[in-house]
Image 1 (cartoon, rainbow, N blue to C red):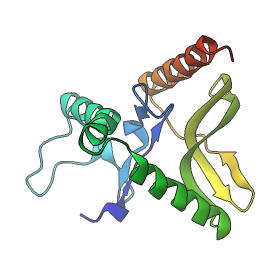
Image 2: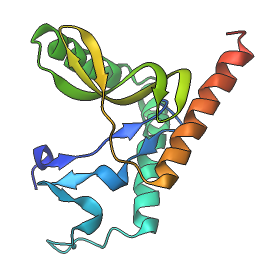
Image 3: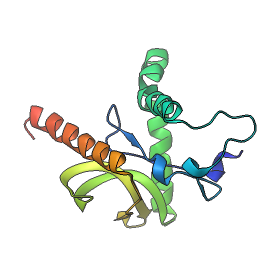
Image 4: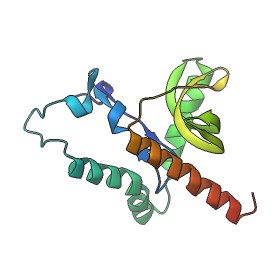
Length: 153
């Protein structure tokens, strides 16, 4: 299956408290959690999703261990954001901006699906989240606030 058919977001801070949004992920427009396994793939059980989430969240550690930094991935992401702004794409991207009233989260910068255009980070999309995902997003916000407080912000 072509990766262009898969639409899924990881929200929150870029690190250990990042939150994969399984409940809004789709493949070819079909909700991922409703899709039966195909092509001999294993069912997407909670255990499998937890393992995938762990691998995604902790992949930076593997990259740092192998290369010493994650600069190439950061550069690629930054170039995609610049393209979306320069070309006025109105592209939905998980970018970080100051949240005030998004899902009852205030006064912290987190990555959430956002419309990116010539105006930069614009409309924050009210992406569907399960109760568990929303709780995890609030934990991510709390973790960033705690980190900011540690350095006096």
